[in-house]
Amino acid sequence: MINFNQPHLTGKEAHYMYEAVYAGKLSGNGTFTKRCQSRFEERYGFRKTLLTTSGTDALEMCAMLCDLHPGDEVIVPSYTFVSTALAFLREGAKVVFADSMTRNPNIDAETLEALITPRTRVIVPVHYAGVACDMNAIMALAQKYNLLVVEDAAQAIDSYYKPSTTSSHNGGERFAPSGENPRKGAMKPLGSIGHLAAFSFHETKNITAGGEGGLLVVNDERFIRRAEIIWEKGTNRAEFFRGEVNKYGWVDMGSSFLPSEVNAAFLWAQLENLDEIQAKRKALWNTYYERLSNTLARFAPSGENPRKEAFTLPDIPSYATNNAHMFYLVLPSLDSRTALIKYLKDNGVAAVFHYLSLHSSEFYQSRHDGRALPQCDRYADCLVRLPLFYDLKIEDVHHICDLIDTYYQSVC
Ligand SMILES: *Cc1c(COP(=O)(O)O)cnc(C)c1O
Image (cartoon, rainbow, N blue to C red):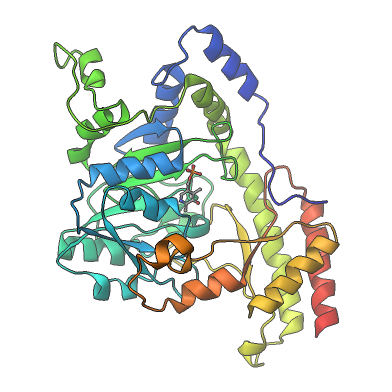
C-alpha cells in the first residue's frame, strides 16, 4: 500500500531533542524556540515570530489580536480547514463565507468587495496547497475599507507571491527565495504580506514540530507587544526579562500558546533541512505534473470539448510559486472522483478527498447567510489529493501515474 502521508525524519530530531532535554530547560521560549524564530525572521523577513503549539493556536492568537467585538464580521473562505473560521467565531465574530475561484480553490478576490459591510473587520485568505491568493487585490481592498488581513499560511511555508509595482506595508520584496526561477524577480514570502499570519507544523505539512506545532507572524508593529503578552497567559514576562519593566504582572487576556523546547528542537532539525525537503517534494510534484499532463493530452486531444476533460491539474497563477505542499486533481463530478479513489485504493494507493465546505457543515450551516458558493461545493465534491511526502519514491509516483493512465485508457 502507498500511504497518503508519512511524516519525514531528517535524522537530527532525536539528537536535538536529547540536547534540549539535557540542557535542563524544557518549557517554552528557550534556546531552540529562539533559534527557530530567528531563522524564520531572517529567512523570510517576518517582522516578529512566535512559535505556537499548533497552527490553530496561531490563528486563535491572530483572532485575539484583531480585538473583535460582538457583531464584527470576518470574511473567510468556506473551502478551508475549520480552524480558519473557528478562531474568529471563538472571539464572538460573525463569519462570512466567500467562494473559491474557478481556476483554483483559493478565495475569489473578485467576490470580496460585495461581502464587505460597515461591520467587516478582517479578511482571512487561505493559501490553499501553498499557492498564493491574489494578495494585491486583497490588500488593496483592506486598505480601502480599513480592514485587517490575516493570512492562513498553514500550508504555505517557503512559498511566495509576486507583487506588481504597488508596494505593500512591509519590505518582503527584499527576500529572494532560494532555488526559484530568477526571472520571477522580486517576490514576497507568503506570511509576510498580511498584518498577521499563521503557519502550521502539523505532521501533514511540509515541515513538522514533531506532530503538532505552529507559528504566529506579526508583520504590523502595532501588534508585537500584545502578541508577546497573549502568548504567555496575559503576562508581560517577555518585557520583564528584557528589563523593560521592573515588575511583571497580569496585564491582558491570553493563554498558554508556547510549545515545549522538545517540540522546538524537533522543528529545528527540520528547518535546517528545509531546502533539501523542498527540493525533493518539488521533484515529486513535477513528476506528477509532467506524467499526468501527458495522460490528459492523450485523453482529450486539444480542440475537443473541454467539458469532456478527465481532470484538471493544479493551477499555479503567474503571481504565485509552488511549495509542493500538495498534489491534487479536480475531477468533473462526485461520481468520477469516487470511482477514481476506489480504483486507486483497489490498486494499493491511498488517495483522499479534502475539505467538506464549512458553509454546508452541521455546525456552520446555521451561521451562514444561505448564499450559494458553487465553487466551494465543486471542490468539496471533485478534488482528490494524491500521495505526496518526502519519503515517497519517484518510482512510486511513476507507478501511481501508470495506474491513472491505465484507468483513463479503460474508461474512455
Ligand atoms: C493544517 C491547517 C490548519 C491548522 O493547523 P494545525 O497545526 O493542525 O492546528 C489551519 N488552516 C489550514 C488551511 C490548514 O491546512
